[in-house]
Length: 78
Image (cartoon, rainbow, N blue to C red):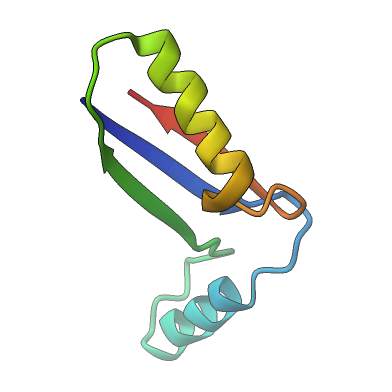
């Protein structure tokens, strides 16, 4: 089963990579962009069909290694 995990910085946490992209876009003439937040997407291929177990396992993966839950939020899409 394919599972997608989207990890992004929590609201209020400074995103230096997003600011760099924002400035680069402005320098290229894209003046309508007000803010940029950069996130990462992790795609997992997992064995099994029990969606509840898979969700619980992936949430544990996120809490333990895939996301820094102090500064990042994550979303799991099965």
